[in-house]
Image 1 (cartoon, rainbow, N blue to C red):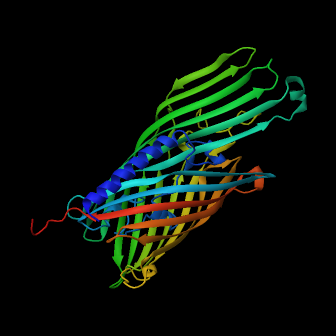
Image 2: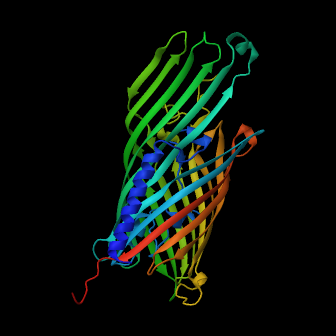
Amino acid sequence: MSGRTLRSLLSAILLLTCTGLSLSAQTFGSYTPYSIYGIGDLASPGTAYNKTMGGVGIASRNHRFLNPVNPAAVTARDTLAFMADYSIIQDNRMFRQGDMRSASNTANIGDLMISFPLWRSSAMMVGIMPMSSTGYGYSYSFTDYSLIGRTGNIDYSAKGQGSIYQLFASAGATFWRRLSIGAEFIYYFGKIDKTFTETFSDASYNGASNGHLLQLHAPAGKFGLQYEQPLGPKASLTLGATYRTAANLGGHTQHYRYSTGSAASDTLYYKAGSPSGVRLASEKGIGVSFRYADKFQAEFDYTRSDWRPTGMDTAEGFTGNITATGGKSVFTSSLSESYRLGFEYVPNRNDIRYYWRKIAYRAGAYWKNDYYLLDGAPVNSFGITLGATLPVFRWYNGITFGIDFGQRGSLKNNMIQERYINFSVGFNLFDIWFQKFAYD
C-alpha cells in the first residue's frame, strides 16, 4: 500500500471518527442501567486486537498490532514503519429483573491511533479512545393508593447520556534489547447529562424535574514496562507492569430542580460550579505472556483499582438514583479488580496456498467486578471472547473481527441481570514511510 493510499484511508477514518464523536453527544454510545452511577460504564481496554483476547495487553509485544494497554509496548514495531488502528464497536444487551425484560442496541467508536518511530529503538503513539459511556432510560408509575388516591397518577422517568473520552500520547524506548519502558500523557474530556422527572395526571399539581449536566476534564499519566526473556531459539517470556495515576476532575457542573405545570412554574434549586473533590481512581496492572515463534501466544493479566476514595458516593450528579426514603444513593464506590486470559494461534503466516492458514485466530476470557456496589453487593461481570484477523494487501495490514459475549449482575438481591453480545471490527494499517531509497 502506498503512502498516498494510506493517508487517504486515514483521512476517511478521521472524518468517520469526528462524525461518531458528534453523534455520541446526541445518542447513546452504550446503554446499561448500571451507567447511572459515577462517570458511567467503563470501556473495555484496548483495540479490537486486545478485545479478541479477553482484553489482555500488559505483557503483549506484537510488532503487527498497536497495543495501547501498556505504553512500553509502543516499541514492539518495525523501525521504518508507520502504523495506524481504527475500530468500531456494536453493543447488544438483554436485561432482566424479576418478570421484566428489555433489550438495547448501540454503536460507538473503539479507537483511533497512529504510531511512528522516533530514534533508533524508541517510538511514539497518539490516539483517542472512549474511557466511559453513560446511557440509560427507565420509567415507572407510583402504585401507593394512599398517595395516588389524592393526587392522581404519578409517573417517574429517568434518562442519562454522554461519554468521557481519553486523548493520549505515549512514548517508549527499549534498552539492552530486552527491557522496554514507556510513559503516557492522558487527557480525559467529555459531557454527561442526567435528568429525573416526576409528572402528575392531575393538572392542579405541579411536576418536578431534576437534572445534572457534567462537563468534565482531567489530566493523568500512565507508566509501563516490559521485560522479554528468550526461552530458546523460538520461544520467549514477557513480564509487564503498568501504573495509571489518579486524576482530579475539573470542568463545569450544573445542578437544577424546577417545577412545571398549570398551577405554577418555578425554579426550586440551581447550582453551578465545578466537581471539586471528585477524582478518577488510579490503576495498577501486571501481566505475563508466553510466545512461541510467530505462531502462538498466551497471556494472563491482572488489574486493581480502588475507587473508594474518589468522592463519587456523595458528589452531586455522580451518586446515581436516590432511594425514596433514606435520601442516600444505593450505589457506593468499591475496589475494582479484573482477571484476563488470552490466546492467539496462527497456522502459517507465510502460507502461499491456503489463505485460512494465514489468519490469526484468537480467544479469551475475563472476570471482573465493577467499581461500585449496589445495595452493598458487588456487581460482577464475566465473558468469553473470540476473534480473528484477516490479512489484506501486503505486510501487516489486516481486518480484525471480534465477538464478546458474557453477563453482568444477577437475579439476586433485586439486581438487573445483563447478558450481552458485543461485536468489534478493527482496521490495522501498516506502511513503510521512513525508508531511504538508493536511487531517485
